[in-house]
Length: 296
Image: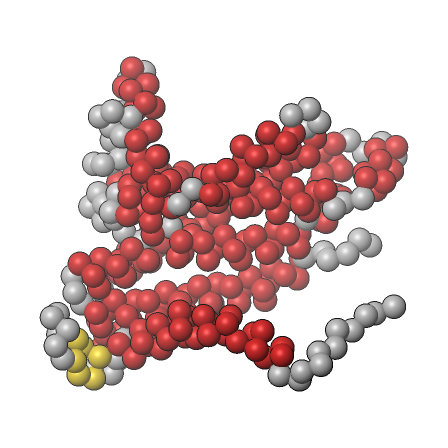
């Protein structure tokens, strides 16, 4: 029997929603509206005046080879981070789901990285891989491998992808573990009795039942890679070396706050938002078709 919640005061639900709605308007719709407004204006670097230039900021943006390069770099970084973090999160969750002794400590250690702030995560990985005093860099030098992400753009990109992946694996691990624990044990036992091995059970039973979780995490990880990795890149490379890690979210910061080109920075933020929305729509339009929400 479905229980319905009744409010004696007809306005109480709206009062309860008011704080969250106020936060959304002030911290999301307000800045978004201001960015959209600034994208069509040319602002004095000192902030003393501005004038409408309509689509001039967007025309300069799309005509810039530097922006096109940054877009391609962002796609490589984002999809690499998303794929690695999802794969490792699923791998660790599968292992944790089988651990019997010490499982609590194992799960706690895997969840801890999510509590680390992005900037701190970047600093930690920079200390580990720093070419001068990094522990792993010392090992690389002893085996004859030249490692210097402060000068090599490819190595810098690898380092920020690894750091961003490490930060996000814990989030994916929690959801994958919850999805694995929600799968009925009887279904897996019945498949084992029928002669299905561990690999076949995972491919034909476990993974299809995890598709709703996987789809949700794909959307979340894509947004994370495009927006929430700013602190990691700022702490490790600051967009360098040679703009090798200057992805779109960092370019918005560098052009707006360092270059004082507020119009171009606002236009970039609008384009970035449109790109993420478009990729999310594509995921819902084409990938969700393969999601299996119930057992057949």
